[in-house]
Amino acid sequence: MKIEIIIPTYNNSLLIDANFSKILKSISFEKNISITIVDDGSGLDEQSKLKKIVEREQKGSKIPLNLMLFEKNVGFASNVNRAMLKSDSDIVILLNSDVIPEKDFIKPLLPHFQNELVFGVGMLDKSVEGDKVILRGRGVTYWKKGMYLHKRGEIGISQTSWVSGGSCALRTSAVKEINGFSKLYNPFYWEDLDLSYVARKIGYEIIFEEKSVVTHLHEKGAIKSNYKQGRVTQIAFRNQLIFIWKNITDFDLILSHMVHLPLHLLKALLRFDLSFMVGFVLAVLLLPDIMSNRKILKKKFILKDKQIIP
Image (cartoon, rainbow, N blue to C red):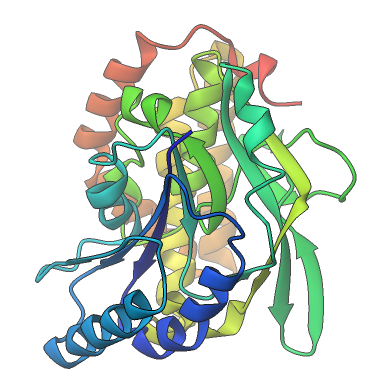
């Protein structure tokens, strides 16, 4: 089984420098595995630093190390697709630049892919948030008041609603079947929920594997470093609406959303929640592209939404 680890980065050479050797040490086998760093249009100085890091680490490693540099910043989904959709591997493993895997984290993932219906496997994410470490990686989703919502799930169950784009293993052929992450979600957030949801609706399975462990330096990632919180919240609301308009096809859920959305907008207006209002407008502006994507996907879906959403 051929494996490619893909590490997307944007203006984060310091994290790559600090964590890359740890990633190499976490891999106990060297056959049929490679690592690719995909830079999303960082400055020339940043890209020069990445070149030096890869050159340095390659000298002491038998694992092929690749570096893909781009001038244009396109966002997380499109940047990962640059490498993922061109990969000739059987399995791609996505690791954010702020994620450090524990030793032999790959081994527990691979047996799951003997089942050809398995699309992806998520990892146990020890998320460092302030002075706390929160165990993430397993997700729970539900429908409430016309909206698709998600939250952290308890560890100890293999069932998960999605696998995190920051630490997961994916079947490359299946990813290519649905053309990778949707660029509608650029620059970040909801692309991994979307990918998982689409995969499940066309008949694939996703799994959470708690024996595959990573540490996530949550506060040091590219989003926290490059975006203000207000902008992050606007994009999150926008992408939540994109997800619903793009993927939900059960009539009663569509009706529920249409009934509740004006109420959500009114409440946002009354409490001066500009983030939700701006997110709504941004989603409306993308409506032609959303509907185009929806039309294509609807032909591939074989399961109803209520077979996916608890």
